[in-house]
Length: 125
Image 1 (spheres, one colour):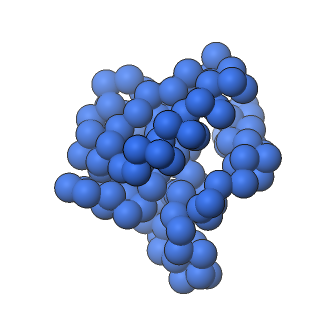
Image 2 (image 1 turned 120 degrees about the vertical axis):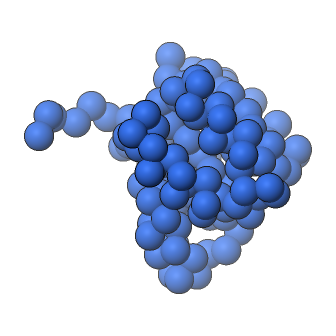
């Protein structure tokens, strides 16, 4: 069962997405801000991180930069989740180190497709 770290400060979004992903077989770890997300990623080593970009304490862009700059967490795929849907927002998330980008409100089938793609085993290079 893949483990997903959901870093989301909005309680309703966090609860809804957690339940929907758990029903599809994922183990969910939850962080309410970027600092907690970094700490949980380092201790729990999830298979994938869903990162809200507008977070308290440490925003999602900075949290992603820190995780991708840390040898112990750099290979964990991160999907940026944001209500900002402009191309510049997507590029900013990718520049910070996110592996993919998705917009809110969440379209679950689309998000599940991105999760599946990032969790596929990759051949050793």
